[in-house]
Length: 134
Image 1 (cartoon, rainbow, N blue to C red):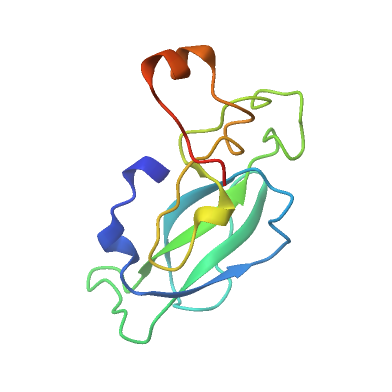
Image 2 (cartoon, rainbow, N blue to C red; image 1 turned 90 degrees about the horizontal axis):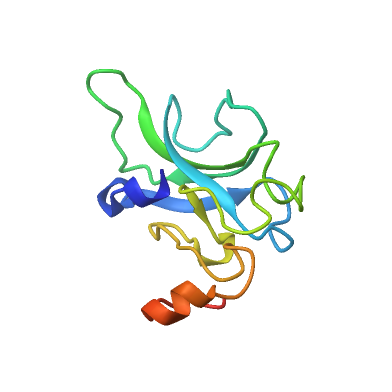
């Protein structure tokens, strides 16, 4: 989950590769996956589609136990807002979702009003919670 990603796990990122145009996406899901390489497109085994992935610097060492690298991947499920605008995530977003405009190498990213599907709710306003507009 996005909220559980430790910024220390991103220290060896050198770049991000987007496999599709992210300007029309309100959010993407991000996860850390164990993969065999530092820079090539990782294998994808989820429902939905791979939208992007991080590349790692040459200084990134593989795990001694598995020989794999921990890399961030960005993806969307078939029931996400881009495919079903009136569906489950017409408002709100999955816990691992971030606005792709807030993501950069070594930067976890965060949710925005856009990724949450619109302006803050009355309850959020009453509690003084605001999200960036991005």
